[in-house]
Amino acid sequence: MSTGLTPPKPLPLATDVSRPFWDGLREHRLRLQYSPSTDQWVFYPRSLAPGSLADDLEWREASGDATLYTFSIAHRPTAPPWADSLPQFLAVVELAEGPRVTTELVGVAVEEVRIGMPLTAVFDDVPGTDVTLLKFTADGSR
Image 1 (cartoon, rainbow, N blue to C red):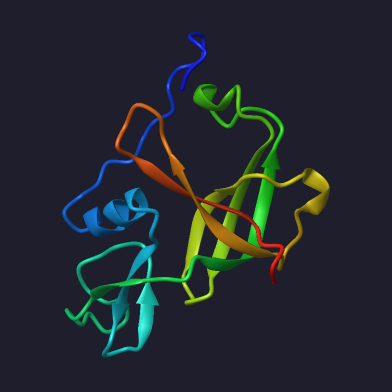
Image 2: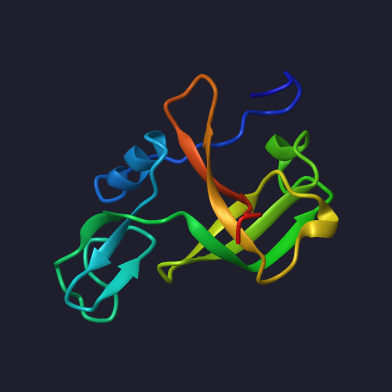
């Protein structure tokens, strides 16, 4: 949480469409939408499949495996609530299932971070809330 001087970090609010994603994270499971008609995984949560507008989206459990697509290391706070969270590893990861997700890397050293590194999902339970955030860390098994 906050040190008292740092404002609290904003938290996501689930919508009717995104609720299964956030509920899955709270259960430490990564659930994504999948469109059988297009044979594609979908992220961010939506009502219709991108490209086809098919209404066949269903929720499926994803592996949590990913590859680092791009990143930025913030050595200065990106906003006041992150003043005590430096450096902050901002990233876009490509999930094994295909979609890309904006996230944060945790448990990695600056010198370890490189494009293409294998990653695995980490579920960050926010203390004092019922929110779990999706973050990623280095996957040493791949």
